[in-house]
Amino acid sequence: MNMEGMPLARQVDMVFRKLEEELTDAVAGTVSICIRNNSIGKFGVRHNPIESRDGHLEEAAKGMSAAQVRAFRQMAIDALKLKRNWTHGEIVYDFSVRSGGSGWSASVQYESNYNSSSWIYRNPGTGEASHRSYRGFK
Image (cartoon, rainbow, N blue to C red; front, top):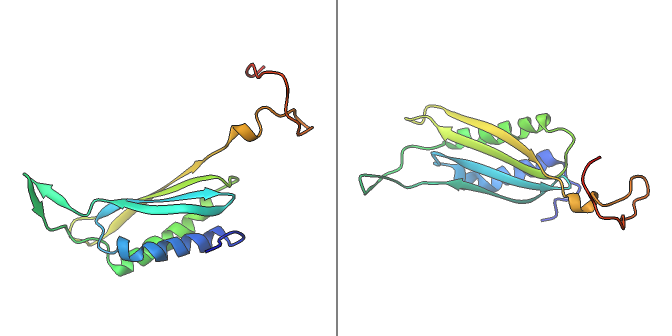
């Protein structure tokens, strides 16, 4: 699937639709989305659906309902309005369901990434690589 040129909000919508089955009944976890040039490169969800107490496996508590997953997807899309002026990085959504499954909460963390190898040794204004060794900021 080629996501290049597709708005980031639409890409995030597609990610959450792809993860919907995995998020349904999840009690807590983290959805991570890696972005390069405003296109999603990889994504996934990390959660631990199996709990143990005193060495015995227990049935997992009630997790997210389908309606809560849809609300989570919409929150993730709406949160993109807070992303400003970066095109490379990671978005991390941490989520958890309150005991009894009555409510849920989520937080969003943005991380911008820059690759200095593409610009740190270039002469300002010329775009040409410097032949001098870099000695730090002056």
